Amino acid sequence: MIIASDTTSLIVLEKLESLYILCELFDKVLIPSIVLDEMKVGSPSIHHKLQEFNCLQITQVETSKRLNSLLSVLDAGEANAIELAIALELPLIIDERKGRQVAKQLGVKVTGFAGLLIQAKRKGILSATDAIALLDKAVENGLRLSQMLQVQVRTTLLV
Image (cartoon, rainbow, N blue to C red; front, top):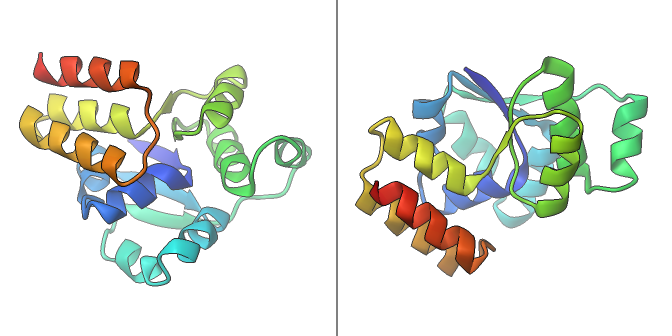
């Protein structure tokens, strides 16, 4: 399975040294080059880290009217990730609320960091304990998830 990705989950997984989860879940994760640029701001060596994983592929996104329209309401990473997902008819990893809403309105199937943890647990890539530990660390590191969503994710992981 191939999926497109925005920035946040990639940054979170990189900080948690857990990018391997993406390669266990997906054959390919397409990352718009503008998303890579956003990631370089907080992690200048990120490009080298991404190259360690064969499933992670940086790609150019073609400029289009739709992309320009998305850029008027979203940041460049989100807009490019959504455009890539639509153009190639792919699901999308995106965490920001506004970006998720726009993507869903445009018919894109979305998941985020919490959804990735649930998928990884279901596929036996992570134990419930390890997935919850990653969730806790991500929240400690600044990932914004509502308390209600955290409880839902923990409950789902323990089932």
